[in-house]
Amino acid sequence: MDQPGRVEVRPIRQLTGTSEFNEVFFDGASARAEHVVGGEGDGWRVAMSLLGFERGVATLAQQIGFARELGDVVRAAVATGAASDPVVRDRLVAQWAELRAMRWNALRTLGAAADPGAPSVAKLLWGRWHQRLGELAMQVRGAAGAVGPTDWSPEAPYELDPFQHLFLFSRADTVYGGSDQIQRTIIAERVLGLPKEPRGPKG
Image (cartoon, rainbow, N blue to C red; front, side, top):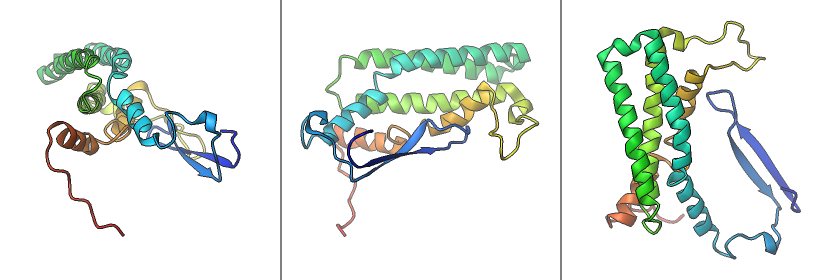
């Protein structure tokens, strides 16, 4: 961040009102040779390795948070009486079963580091799962889930309860770290050996 030139970080404000993501701009910045990671010309490989970790085995730690969130939704469903609805019960059970399946898949892929599709499969699984959990949290809350604080104003960022934050933040799960479309392309081309998508003419 303090290398010669200018490094500018611009926070991206999300639906939640927070900024977990940023744009980073480099203006005349030049890293010193000893700060190069992976060797000259290896930037793409290093970036793909990092994204592979984020999409794949890192979800083992992430699932601790997922399990806590699911437990909160289950307790709220019991407290509000939503758990008496058989449709809600089925969704709760499905979320639990899918979380277990994701855990076993992540453990299985620990020994498959050379498999280029393993992280993409994991990302497809947990991104959609987390979004469905957010939707289920809103269903459990009912109409109250759509209500924000009464003292909101443009000058004061709105505050969300944990379920509202879960629902809104999880909208980004299928985009960051590589969108679902990118994951499917990786699986199709690098794992299944399907023909690559046609590229446009070079301009």
